[in-house]
Length: 290
Image (cartoon, rainbow, N blue to C red; front, top):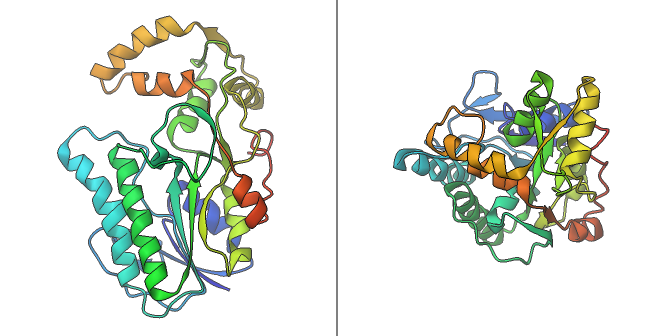
């Protein structure tokens, strides 16, 4: 099977490429010379070859915009980049897969949030992904192409970015502190499980949350990560961290801010029941497998 993959140099894209390359012809598209097709989707319409599946994993994430220009960049990459990719499609694929995010729901706490939940995301990242989802859905309907949209939570794998990467770095460096009792739970999913399920989904369409279905607690997660490096985890009460986070709100280089503290204070889990029923989604537990 021929698979066109955008964002192969990114964390999830790299996981997808490594997982699928042995059994499929994977053509990569991105801004660097290492790609089969070099193209900056945010400003260019690429010339795409025929493929069976297009996986659009390229996008802008993991940063908090500080200027209007940085906010605009989310829409240029995530929305306009998606439009340009679709304009480059000359021969229709059997399936188009858009990698989206649970950030579109716009919630910081809750349990078993399903795909029917309203899209309340207000950050540039969330709004740009909401717009990208709409663009892809309308294109699929107009062109008669099956479209899958995966709304993903925290993605686990080797050398992850974002909050998980920051946690691993802090644990390995000996300066990680667990916030409170660590019993809050978070949805997670292994990048390679996302990759493995895609080739078997020809003929499918729809929007799906993908998680490992276990939603480990922060305590379970940090204990597992600490055990890999024979490190110990120390606890801190919440209140001092909330006060320290105020410094990070004002000083960009400070390792803590209110955004990160709030992420660690509340449970936030998403239901993958729909994917299990309709896509034969049967992932591995994150804990113990990355």
